[in-house]
Amino acid sequence: MKIIGVRFRTAGKVYYFDPDGNDVKANGHVIVETARGVEYGTVAFAPKEMDTGKFPMSIKKIIRVATEEDANTYAANKAKEKSAYDICLQKIHDHNLAMKLIACEYTFDNNKVLFYFTADGRVDFRELVKDLASVFRTRIELRQIGVRDETKMVGGIGICGRPLCCASYMPEFIPVSIKMAKEQGLSLNPGKISGACGRLMCCLKYEEAAYEDLNSKLPNIGDTVETPEGLSAEVTNIAVLKQKIKVLVTLDSGDKEAREYSVSDLKFKPRKHHVEASEDSREAEKLEAMDKREKGSDLDA
Image (cartoon, one colour):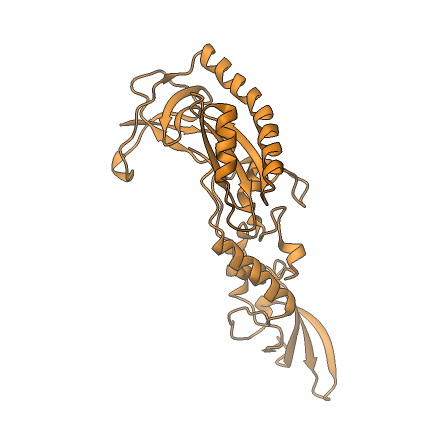
């Protein structure tokens, strides 16, 4: 059947809907029903034939293609979110709760107001919800999110000088591990491999496959190799991308001399690349463990 993809926020997940015979264009807008209620979404891709057997749940039909009136309603909701955010911020202060308010969202039909926050632990916000409900006269939902989700919502600039990947185009967070930093020969200082969220940088994943392939063809530092002249040498430094190796050659006279060779010129038995544990690497591994514990929230519908 024909399926369209719909997003509810920039760089958000794509959800699938049945266009129900409507003329839906990419980057257009539609009104759909989600788990959160009726929502205004942006069409990520135009109708295309897809095998519905791949989907675990039945595909819902869109309610309608968004009209100009719908667009005005959506804009009005966005305008109200700023004042709702300020009110909630004041209420949090009044109740003296240890939580950081991140964002506020109205559902399209105004049946619910969602407030996203971060906190170090569990927060008893029952009285806060009652207080907010008396102000907004609608359903209130407070949703605790993780630091990665916070960064995705707020956005920012990475150390590369470009907008954060998670806030600009990444629909979902990719698994990242300290092993990726080790493979790429990066400093294991947490301050240098952490993103704006304080967790391991997502971009560690980008070149992982290339480095794994290159490292599989290299010796380890400290290994003994044989030079083209038939001399024994100890590996002292490796330039992974250049595939160059610096070695300390033992001459026939017993003296040692530093030389550089291409990997293809040396004879050795490639072994799995490894990095000795250090204080920095242990700290970085703590970041990785925090990533695994922190499941975060589904910020979309």
